[in-house]
Image (cartoon, rainbow, N blue to C red; front, side):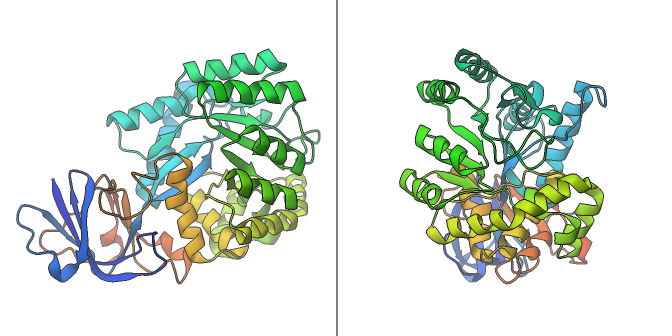
Length: 414
């Protein structure tokens, strides 16, 4: 199948600019050529989609997600699995999130949906599975239902082997407490003993599995980097040595600003205010988030300015809203719209190991693309003006008629 996307304002996420009146030719799910619209020629047997000046860019990525936090008493497992699939599909079709990396999901529901999407049984984003969030007895994230308590060096080795056996893509390890948790679960505390953490990283290294490390304080961050973590999640508190180590080891940093930045007193726009009202966070947890917010923002900006490799992950729900909120927080904390777009596209694909295939609009890459109605390089919230979503060149969501646009001959119906 051939498709021509014509008259686009192209943001390829390779260069920080807009390429006006550009055409992208897609054949068999891949981008075959990028050229001025006037040189695209006649459609012939190709499907022609006139974007009428819409902003064409790579689809978005959110590389730190979880399913809803529901116990089996609240909802049977089968219903939770179904709900997660619905949320994942909605992230693709409603917000243009083409790739997601899971950071903890019980009963390997992420593995199940990854297989369903990859096989073509269902239309959904590209999903990278972690299985359970591995923590200690009395560790972090226990109230979510997605954490598995593990103790002792061999306990960690056995749990990681079970994860591998069940088909995960990476291993999510918990090295510290967090902001959202009981009073004994503090992000200033580190949880693993030295022999436990060494054993966990050693088996991951032997088996060739990347470690996604929850590390919220300097001690945890430095231990994770030195032992070979692929990515540091959160980094609420860091120090200059953490930044130096991130650079030295070329370790990814996923800051998840939403965890400390989204409370009623911190909301700065209607999108954030609506999310905060819906979330209904307790006053105690709001206080913990607000107490951590300024320090979190400081180290985010220091990492950004130092040139640390950073990707965008939200750690909140609903999945269709989460990455969009996180993008706004990046800009609020000092990132440019360009830096934010790269973190949510090119870097998202790279942290998941598929940067050679996805994450930018370049000839030869898979055509996982979105079209938005206004320029996100001028205002990052313009990513919300979604018009089209394509997965491997096939339109999976068309919202152009919702904005009053009239399709021309050769365009897809809504």
